[in-house]
Image 1 (cartoon, one colour):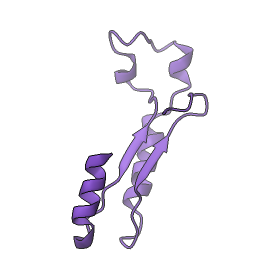
Image 2 (cartoon, helix red, strand yellow; image 1 turned 180 degrees about the vertical axis):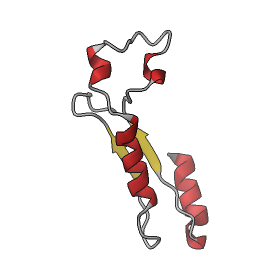
Image 3 (cartoon, helix red, strand yellow; image 1 turned 90 degrees about the vertical axis):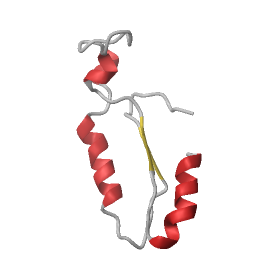
Amino acid sequence: MGLKRAIDEEFREIGIRAVSICPGGIHTEFAMGEGRGRSHDDPEVSTMMSAEDVSEVIYFTLTRPRSMRMMEARLQSMSEELAG
């Protein structure tokens, strides 16, 4: 977050925007790999967001008018506990 803020401060005047996209759990192979204690049939995995859910937020962020900037997008599934 600090790096994003520094980039925003330094480059905003020349039109460069910086944003932090902070997703919660995403139902991907990465979430279920060895040592992560999850499998495809784990009920917790089935309630995670899809990669498409997150890509919609990224697309929305990138297509905002050049006259505005989004600072942060935090998203989680409805079943996930609120993260710090």
